[in-house]
View 1 (cartoon, one colour):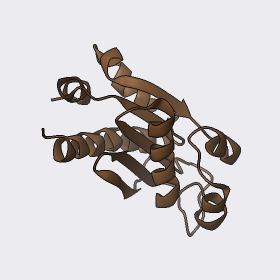
View 2: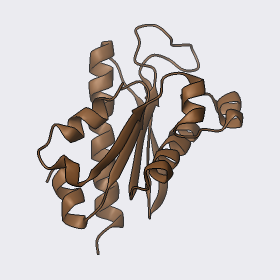
View 3: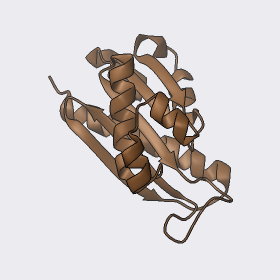
View 4: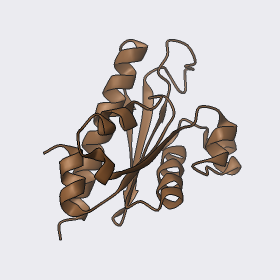
Length: 156
């Protein structure tokens, strides 16, 4: 079952906050017919200032952990869920490359966050490939994680 069918069946709404995927998660959701019944909103926040303004990451989190971190992914999904008043928040932040990586945070490092009534969970990915491949893999994994989260936390 695709995520749109699952969300619709359960009467849930999802919102997304993305960085390195540039809106690809939202695109993959809205490519599915019927997505207007369950997709509330999506934002792409590339700069740190944008991440503070829209999904509401705290400056302290950015200063302490950086924009590419589990903490940032958690705050992004929580912030977009609150802003959109949706049931599920889904976020992706990372380094798609080919530049921008460091020894501590290499190209391909991606964090995904999902939240809802089951709390907030994050997952770290270490992907390889071209920029497009990393973005595609991250977006698809984000949808898998969100689907698993919904199945686990919204059974009734």
